[in-house]
Image (cartoon, rainbow, N blue to C red; front, side, top):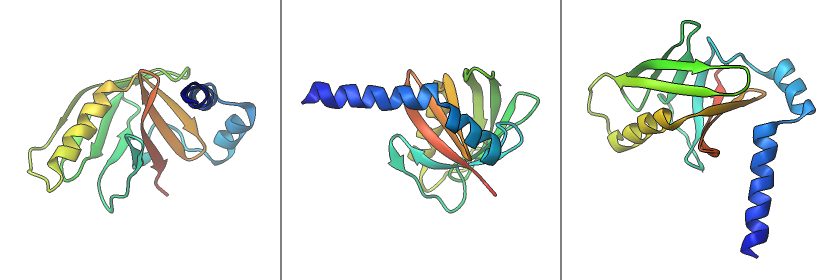
Length: 140
């Protein structure tokens, strides 16, 4: 039974990573570009994530990353290509003590582990080692 569940999980992940023609059409029609879009985190480490403010990212055209964690402003560098390869590095933030500081630290650590991304309509999916790390939704 574990083998069947594992095989199904691998198949679903392959579908997400590889994509499909209808998904690409959906992205073209309803999606937002990676750069210059404000992305709000809606899923983190496999769990639905709901934060009123914070946990946003903006990927600039100058390969600079900016955003907000729990209460700190974040900045860093990134590279990304059209094949879905992404590397985020040199992430730093202001130094206010946040109510959810451990969660913000985990968020920053997760960003450093990203090695690829997928876009599906208004969603940005960050992956590391073939594992979904976080899902962001384009802010309207």
